[in-house]
Image 1 (tube, rainbow, N blue to C red):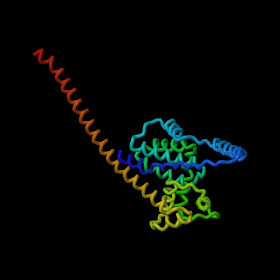
Image 2 (image 1 turned 180 degrees about the vertical axis):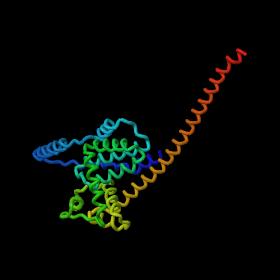
Image 3 (image 1 turned 180 degrees about the horizontal axis):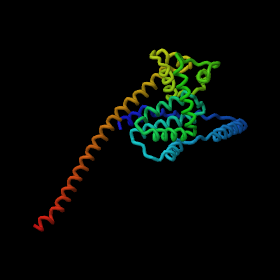
Image 4 (image 1 turned 135 degrees about the horizontal axis):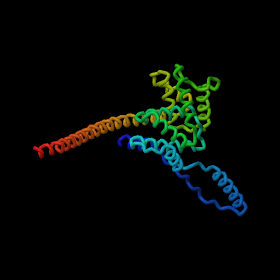
Length: 277
């Protein structure tokens, strides 16, 4: 419960600020008609983009994964789904193999207490609720992991291999202000550096700088993520102890019940013998 509450607080998406209304302008009839025409065109373009709602994503997840999740996992998964849904349907969203690696890493660590089949089912339901392909996520994440293990350093390079080109595409989009940074991308970057075996913090710093991202924001998101994992691990230990105590109590109750039944049976068998005597 503690880990679920912490995760809900620290991973909650920031509220969007409403646009500030402009003061009404006075003009002649012709400009008003032209303005009305422009407003209509803008309205039509806005109506053409109608992404699914958060409620739609949650409904798709529940439909794909019908089993109830323990509260320790459910709260975190729901918060992650809300956040990634908002990122996924942002107009600047761009699928990235690094983000895929980040999401896969998060799920593998957060849900490691579940059976393998159930953990994979939760992951598949999560990605499909975002109208994306979980197999592609897994495949791209595995490819990035394999690539990173063979590297001593990681740099974006538009003329390099597939992974370097993917990083270069992010750097290019970021330089134009068109890259949508997310916490999941930050986790993916950290995982890439971790897989190279580098222990030097400057390795991650250099990669973040090469991509044109905010080091302060990446550091903050990684600290938040590590904090959530730490709290979650503590909550799992508490849950294990609770389950062990409950199993012990249940075993004691069953033993007591069996002993009473055996005593009753023994008494019933002895009664006719005493009567005959």
